[in-house]
Image (tube, rainbow, N blue to C red; front, top):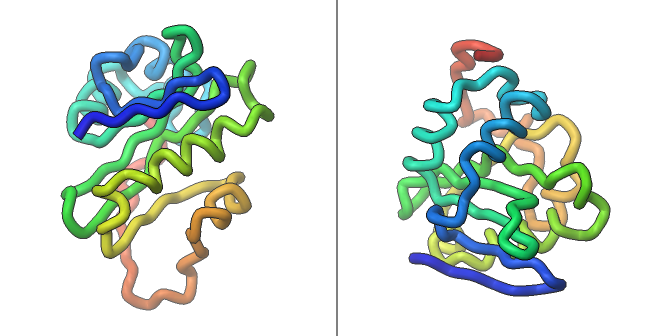
Length: 145
């Protein structure tokens, strides 16, 4: 379901038609630590298979996030970023509020993410470190593209 929210002069939207694929690819492949050198086609495919969130100021995209989900029980928050020129304005908090307000997210049984540097942001929304959870396992096939 397509949802939008206007706050503080910014539009938060789940409309994939508004996403700037080139902008997202540039950030992920050049500026992120988690997806260096990721090919454009992989970014496009990941967007097609995810619930996506964009932040816009006057139709210019300034942030992004996506949730990989089965739309029933599980979600994984990925590729969250705010343009460096827009950081420190509370956009990441508003983005997280918008994501957590989504009906699909509210009904998930497990919602996960991985971060090196934003633990305090995500903790404000109920995320906790899972180091002691003996049930979780994973395979990391490769580090970078």
